[in-house]
Length: 494
Image (cartoon, rainbow, N blue to C red; front, side, top):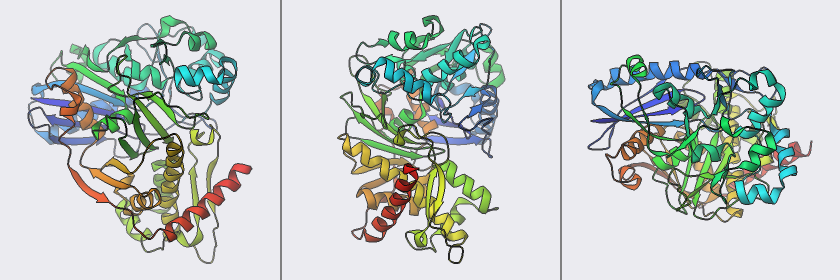
């Protein structure tokens, strides 16, 4: 018997197959190899076609099962992790009405700002743990204001994972975790926020039915089963945003535990039993995967939009046919601080850590007589790491302890330069685990379907494959960070 997990990203769709008895990942695949395109018709916009996610999920399923060479009919549960904060709109026939407005789209910043002013900052932080910002609710309000004819056709709004669940089951449902990501959940009243709906003029009938995040949410329809080559009626038994899911996959479930990931965006994610919030909403709180109304575990999430996307942009521009491993080797020939070159990696939309400002990506201190490709590579990697450090300091100001960080082995933390820079500047140990978000979703589905007793049991088998320790000698790293921070402060004044 096997559990199947998916991770619906904005770059690719990942899938993993986990043995139900040993809880070992036996096969993993992603599709496409080349990153999925993001449509940006105007500055700050970011859209994708949801049907492309589904098409790529079909392809990655076939690829995964061909690699695994197992009996497809032995799969007994399916779990879904997905890119957070997106907006998918469908009509009554479940047809997509427009491209999805995804997580890094910035068009609704001003709408969220107005809502904060009208609802009151104290209400937003105490009830929603965040200001409306640029989250899903604000994006839906943008559609209402700018595409009124299309808005009238909406049957339900969904997050990306809800859309994939719909394609699998023909049913439209969501979770408390999903609603909290969209700023639709009132943590104080423990209900969908009537105040947010009223503020934006959104009818409550557009909100999908709410189901448990870990538990049976529907069953694979005969039509979807035929398309995927699986048996019908497999329970869809887990759904969560990618960052809560990544934390769970790293067994980060209790207060004081910290996870991080460096994909297209960068994230540090901690757990609190108390409903913490940042007064400037630079760091956000959402329902964690093990949140219940009786046991309110909150995930404190710091997100940096410009992370892996900055690295991939530099690689595509300068790396030619080089792998990331080769780029790392070239970058390592340059000393810490990249000979005075600093890169601000904030060119992927409005950044929450700067109160939803569009800072942009900038290279600072370039000397045409001294700097070359290796310097740019190192400055890129360090610049992303410095952004993590900058954000982590905000989290520490909120009261979170960051002395050990758990990360997976499938992202930026594979870079020794990146990991070491963060470890040294935060004086924190980094533990790298052999796990992926997709395998975490698969194991959680086993819990939701009743085959495993608890999430703690499901996530207890991860193995540490590498530990990165901070150096006692911090001087070179601190000088490089100070140089980067000066470049950032100069840009923020513009």
